[in-house]
Image 1 (spheres, protein in one colour):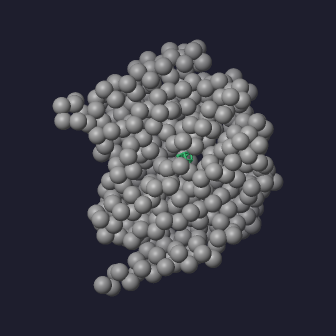
Image 2: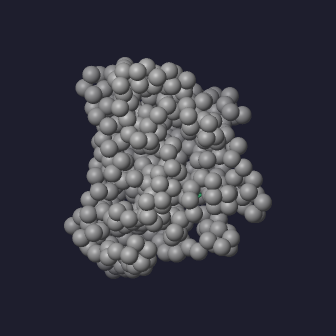
Image 3: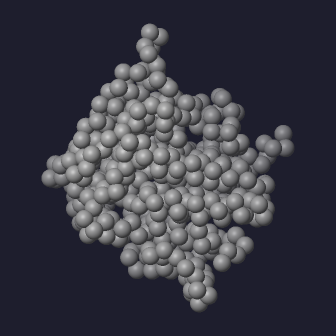
Amino acid sequence: MSDAPRQITLQEWDDQYGRWQAQGFRQPVYGGPLGRHVADGDTRLRKLRFDNSPAALRLWNFLLTEEDRLRAARDSGKKLVGTMKDLGTVPVMAYSLDNLVAFYPDGAWWIPCVMELNSGLLQIADSLGIDESFCPVRAMLGAFVTGAHFPIPDLLTCSVGATCDDFSAIAQRLNGLGHPILWWEIPHRRAPETAEKVVELPGGFAAPAYLVRFVRSELERIRLALEELSGRVIDEGTLSRGITKANHVRALLARLRHLAFTATPCPMPALEMLIAEMLAIHFCSDQGETIAVLQELLDEVNRRVAAGVGYLSARAARIFWVNPVADLQVMNLLEDWGGRICGTEYLFAHALDPIPVKVPPLEALARMALADPMVGSAADRAARIVADIRRFGAEAVIVSRIPGASHCALEGEIIGEIVRGECGLPVLEIEVPPLTDAVYPSLRTRLEALVETVVNRRSR
Ligand code: SF4
């Protein structure tokens, strides 16, 4: 069914879907034309352009049917765990049992974009005193109040300590609304002092051994809570199997990212790659299907690389992108305006690194949790970005600020200074609101100017 790679509109997808169906196209149970999601309110889809492969169709349908999957899981007797803020740790534990399903209520972050501000969630957050001085994750509060976007979980966990002010405040407000939360602490990752025992973390960071021990004891509390919820024992063997499955997802993503960021022409557009990366944090509520979706995407990418087909010319400016975009359309726009993604740091790099397997599983998960780019300093984060810029050969960096996000006030400046000093690359900081339509002209000018700068620098 694969045609030459081409980005197509929602209407073109539905036309193509109709033709494929007439030819006996097979797809998973959640499959169907993409256009049907607009009827559920996902109107932003009409402004996006999508990769035209069956693998991309499966990816999008998988993403856009998560709510149905959660409700079906509950109906089948599974327990739902809402894992807030840690972006990749507790889900690995929950998915080590087959009667638990973990998801991120924080994923409501994207609802204002996908539903083009028509969901009413931000207004509910406003009415609860969480106004636009907070980041778009405040939409999560509205989703809890309406119960319209995900079922209320049987257990809610939330990491606290070295987390952003936005989330701490919003989660406390949620708690105050009558949703009990099992808090677990993730301390600030500081550099080890000379006499301290040091533990190496995934992603190249290091931490004092006692911090790792502390996080391990916190995760032990989570383990007990998951045992109680599931009625099953989570022993080392169970957790190790859970880690093996999570590492399978991470290995597929590592291969996908490498090819998408380094092959010319680019075998998969930035928008589909962003969605694929997001699957790592909680497997979109079905770990087995995540593996199947990513494998199909990787097969498509391998085919394209072997055939030398894809998107964008060798002239495209190679951009490293920092922070997820509140408006998904910006990923399309970057490519329209002459850029391509060659490296990303979307706030969850620790969910992409392989989890260590040569240490006891809770120790491994504690190390991973402490490798979260957001629990250390902005300078640490920048060091990792610099390493990845060199790995993927990026020529410029875009730091996309998240409106209202407390960490965005200064981190862009720090990251920019370090990247310029270490790599001598141009760095652009832009703010991306959930809908960029009103700032389209200025966004375009700034992104095109960056692309032009990159191209001019090549001839120096
Ligand atoms: S402020 Fe940043 S880290 Fe915190 S919830 Fe918002 S996007 Fe996530």
